Image (tube, rainbow, N blue to C red; front, top):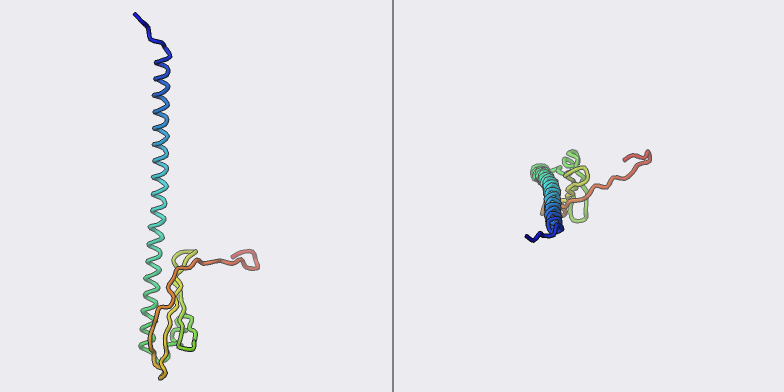
Length: 144
């Protein structure tokens, strides 16, 4: 009877161990990748919810502004009392406000109200409706 060389079984065993280690490594990498994808998706979902919540607040503010403009002759003063920035321009009035999305983002809005020659309200347009990053500047005390 002819005996097989012993290194054949040793090489085969080593090859099987290496294949198992490679497969185990791929499994761990897949789990880590899936976990990171889940965290990113959760963060993205939260950001989307926060944005649309802020957008709804901005829309509600716009509806209130339009209601004030249409129902009051002294609407500019009423809007200032409500906390809006109201600026007179050559062709009408600009109204500024923002809706906060998160600690570092907000929706900035500018509404342009055209005033006709007779003093009545003309067009009401959304001139600016955009997401901006909030930049905090350091004050003299070293804080924000």
